[in-house]
Amino acid sequence: MKFKIILGTLIVAGCAQNSGVVPMGNDTYIVSRQAATGFSGMGTLKADAMKEAYAQCQKSGKVVEVIETVDAKPPYIMGNFPKTEITFKCIEPKA
Image 1 (spheres, rainbow, N blue to C red):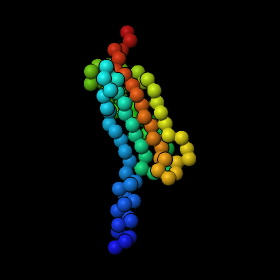
Image 2 (image 1 turned 90 degrees about the vertical axis):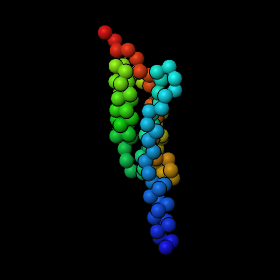
Image 3 (image 1 turned 45 degrees about the vertical axis):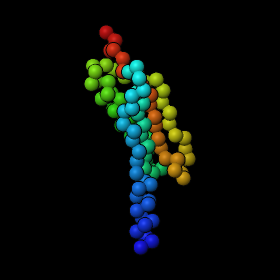
Image 4 (image 1 turned 120 degrees about the vertical axis):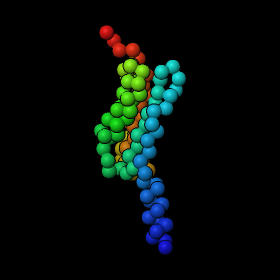
């Protein structure tokens, strides 16, 4: 019985966290991605977050302008898992 409780807790605690695109006003948004463990790389997280950013801006025929990126720093232990946070604007494409 104790094993099931511990296993359930680890599964819930190990879930990846993704914010989705969150509007901040004035065509500015933030999106974040966090890995479920310390064993995955930052590259996939950042790529997935950027895909979400581009999809958001494409809805209105605009392009992404990255304002800021914040990444978790190693070592990736004790809950400090790989995480990226991207703040961006949707702007008119340049001719």
